[in-house]
Length: 133
Image (cartoon, rainbow, N blue to C red):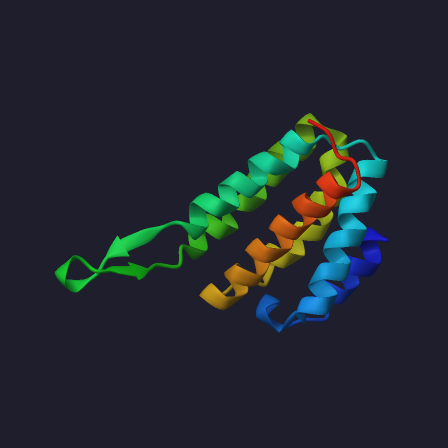
């Protein structure tokens, strides 16, 4: 199942090209799978928190107005966070196998927004299907 989702992701040039209906389907399938392999919610919540921190990054624009800043390096550094979590808990490995190619396709703010939606949706479905802390 994870391999099928990864194949779908790998067929994309940019993550922003992932249609929302497919994103939701992938997230639901992955969330259900992670519950079945007993991944704890706190493991994916920590990763979602790191994504949310990147999403919140702003820099001051001219005159003090905030403007969005895309931290591509910060996104790429999510890969070692996943590797560390997977090294500590083997149940994280399927999530890492899915999210690594997603991170590779994050080149723009739009790609990152789609990535953040995917991670958030996986967490939501994980909880929905009975994921526990």
